[in-house]
Length: 109
Image (cartoon, rainbow, N blue to C red; front, side, top):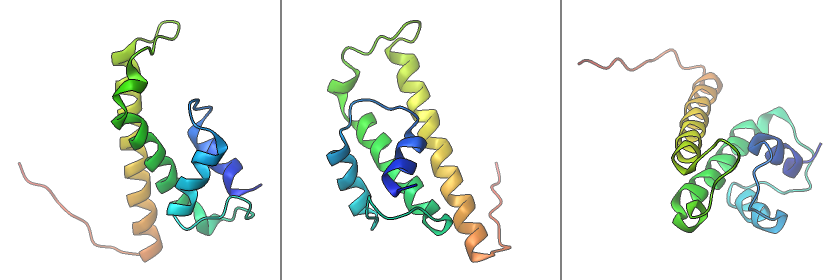
């Protein structure tokens, strides 16, 4: 499976971006679209997916006419932000696992 195919899987059918646009995001994260995917690329793939979703969230014109079945614009925005948050958490966890860090941060109220 190629890096581009894995990115598309991670984006789960996201429409609105052509392959040539996704290639730019991959290159920005030091990935070549035609390379064979391996597990060591996981964080870079997730960062690329995060970049694509963040770009979408920053494009107000993208939200102008989003109405899909029972999903309205605010639902779409909420779901998009939730996915961005999930990716951010997943990237942090993977980084911690890679560094074998046993340190943690405790927040106080």
